[in-house]
Image (tube, rainbow, N blue to C red; front, side, top):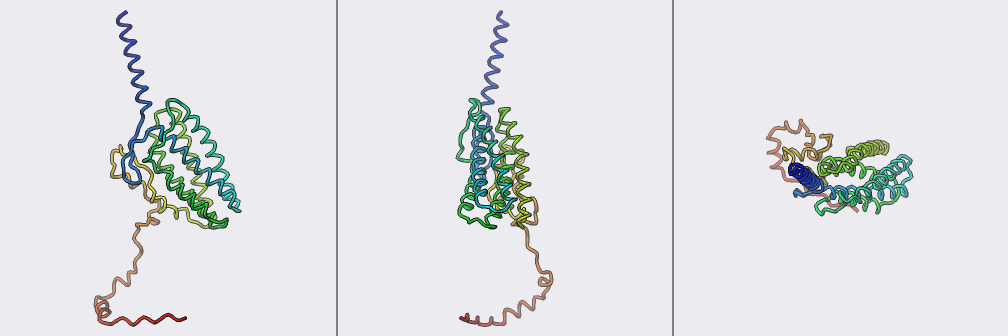
Length: 259
């Protein structure tokens, strides 16, 4: 009888320990500002809800501004998918073992909110279409990278499944945005430098933290803002005497502007 009671007690203690570990699931990430922050699965839910809400608002704005059929179809796709995802996220936030809580260290929505504010100030023309599609490329590149990092904070099975199902959708959105950008004459990689400026959070628990910033580089190194410009090889071969002579010759006085 005592043995049975002991076995039951061990089982209860084990169950309590598992529940505590699951409800306090956290991951340490390095933010765009270089700070290390602790993110819980409640924070992940809030991160996605805010991000989806901004996406819907930007797409609804595009529906009222654009006259381009491809941009309109893309915006409609964003509204449908992100609204559907919002419905599921709100259900997850309502679960007692998941919930929702904002984290001040999570600045993932700052860049998206700034892009939305810029779009709201633009008139309805081709410039708006290009700016909208470019911002969508940047937003989806950041969010795909962020969710891959933040997933480790999700210990609830339903939240894990949601993130796993969301990533392919974001990939499709990114591919569509790049295709529309090509139709508009806006190279898809033109968004890369701006996306790099607002880095997604990186996992501070990674085995090799020094390698994390490499993931923030643009896929095409030639488009990187740090890429060295091409130099004129013939100019490099000029004899040193030429430069010396140039120093001796006084510069010609600048001509006054004509009116």
